[in-house]
Image: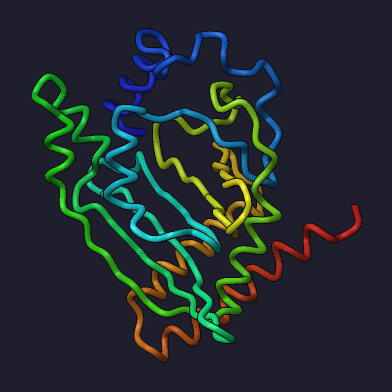
Length: 236
């Protein structure tokens, strides 16, 4: 774990309680149980930076799902992977969009503190990739998120396993005519969460692959997604 990251995390808890989170906001529940689903969404991030991060990275809808990766290594920019479909008559067309910041916005906020850091963040460029995606793959990703995202909790209430300082990963689902659903990975993710993250990574590679590679990746995504749903319905 990076030294500056640890310092920032401690400061967030002791001095700036995460923009409104009290020192007692973290649940007292045991922290040893590995999570097999996502945690409910919480405000464990820089809420000053967040609007700009979303404005820069979330450029398309997420009717079939989204993965946001933030607070990673200082030399790796934040990224978002969004899947959405549009219906035109009897035809449904789906796309996957990958956006990646060319510098780490969170790290920029820390090193430029006191030097108008938000303006420095706004100047960071973002690379965007768009690619058509088979409906079956988009649907498979959406079905995984329907299973893995829990009921919403109090976003001001941190979980014992909330990731606050390094490699925070969120998953969103914004289906039409339904309330948006959001979840986040735990510090010690379970098997299905690891598979879900892997699916997001494969979708990112799909954006940048040639046709032959895309066909191979699509098979991997479908197989991984099927395993998540199958485990949900498996008898204890």
